[in-house]
Amino acid sequence: MPKPVSEQVVVIAGASTGIGRASALAFAEAGARVVCAARGRRALDTLVSEIEAGGGRAVAVPTDVTDPAAVKALAAAAEEHFGRVDTWVNMAAVGVWGRIEEITAAEFDRVLRVNVLGHVHGVHAALPALRRAGGGVLIGVASLEGVRAVPLHAPYTTSKFAVRALYDCLRMELAQEGAPIAVTTVLPASTDTPFFEHARSKLGAMPKPPPPVYAPEVVAAAIVRAAARPRREVPIGGAAVGLYLGQRLSPALLDALLSIRGLGAATMAADRPDNGVDNLLAPIDEPGQVHGSFPGPVLRRSVLTRLLGAAPRPGELVTSAVAALHRLRGGGIVTRATADSAPGRPDSG
Image 1 (tube, one colour):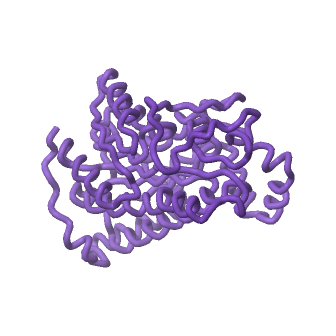
Image 2 (cartoon, one colour; image 1 turned 180 degrees about the vertical axis):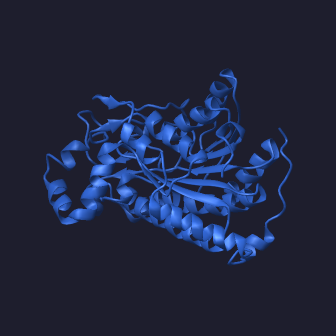
Image 3 (spheres, one colour; image 1 turned 135 degrees about the horizontal axis):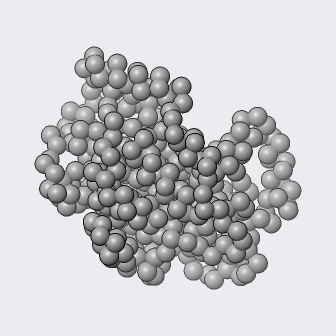
């Protein structure tokens, strides 16, 4: 079982704004020591200052997740500052809005490098650190778009399908090994974050999240719960669960519904022009914030999300039993990465 959140050291890759920033604040409020990583130093510094002003402990480690050496250095910095890593959260992401034929190959490449390879680099850095700590939790923030494709957001949607598959593969491999490392994939629905102001737009307008829209704190609360009670997947909000089920029952019908302009494209463009600023290639020099500028109602709680995260599903219990059986038998698969993992370091406080 994972440690209580109040005793954990948590690394968040993608902590500067939005869900990542809300999660860092929520973990700190729960008593965890937080290692905040992102490209933008200014946003990280204001985040750490806010955490420390509230009596929490945090450190900023500027990190570009597309650089595998930098992500490994992030893990080393976390162990140097706080002695170990108990939970690692991957959530850094960028986006480009527009029709597929208008989005360049270079733009597709950049989104996939950040949104997919950034998670891969995070996994490669996190697993040895979690093993040195004797186990822990790896949380990957995907999206409802990893379950259901939407128009005009192909690079991001493609990346989230890939990320969801990545964590499915990893979960099975760790169970085969009998490793005491849980893997949770979080699937947020539309969330009011600065992601939409920071994305590159070819819509002729600023993109916006289609309703219903949830506050970042709803997602952050689910992530904190998963660090103590990991679940296989955590969809956020009733809308996520509805589309999740709809995709299983009739994906063709959802194709048709989202092809209707008033239900698809029209819900994704705001009634204000794009500002021409994006963080696709470089961070935006700003202090960082949790919330975006969605003008409509924002839901600040989700009872359904809490219920879904309250108890493991039957299949999860079976997978856990398989992993436990492999541990009792001495671990099933010994890999080079497992063999090379060093003993745990003492907790430095």
